[in-house]
Length: 124
Image (cartoon, rainbow, N blue to C red; front, top):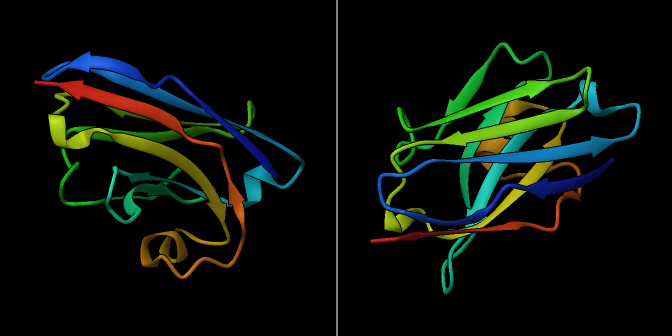
């Protein structure tokens, strides 16, 4: 599975962005998908995940009620709608595919499917 993120950019605090992750390969719909982010000088952290059917989602407390993860298996796409952005959301955002939602949340990854990352910068 190859993953390519897009949609990052510069936005003012309180603004919105929608990240997209395009997947390739026949196994996309069999995998859970997640978004993680890494700010300068910080460790990578979990943001959101969605199961392979798109029926179950999980969010980090820091983004709950502001971010929404979704997927379209027919298009092999996963999205992250980010609203009410804050300066602390500034980071490189990565798309990741793995066997289950819980695996992505735990950080104990089984698979090495990552996108190249897309930069999100939120100005105050």
